[in-house]
Image 1: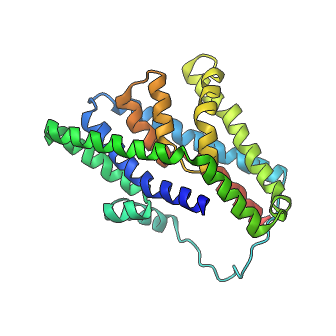
Image 2: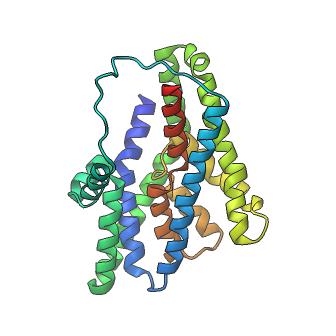
Length: 273
């Protein structure tokens, strides 16, 4: 019950958090962020591709097989690339209320960007202040929820073990090892190399600071969106540009999917080995 309540609360508030953070940030941002965002998006996409490559190499080097339950022979194909792109684009411009209810972060991000840019041009100072206040309120609520993370994580682990027994650790131990190893290589090797190339200095002091204050929460909650307040607080402590990180962090929670890319790659290859 504790795990269910914790995850449910995070899923309920995270879409609202992304929406209002993006609107509030863009509505007050300057007009010189475009080139910086292009650079950040390139880093997000590049690191995700690298994470996928790392997971693929480890999966072939240490092949693991998982047994699928049920009949999968009748599963329909996902469709052509054109169909996938069409579905992605139509989903991005779907009803924003439905997107919030269903956690469609790409759609939420799209409408948040549109609303923020329009508000920057036409909104009054009072309206901007209201959006800022709502953003702060939702952020505070998420921080309160995250403060109960140890109890929620304990409940999730208890539920998994009580439902499946200790065999869950033996049966899927090798699979978990591949997942964790892939994530550690990305966190401790490839991402620091990527960061060091552009910062032109030792990336590990910053990397270890991020690991200490952000990565642990992100790993156990398994929610990039729910971890946004933690990352925002960390950026504030380091004195970064709020106009920039208040948009780049929600953006990264939506499109920078290193963990998801690793998990999908490893699980897919384990299913077909």
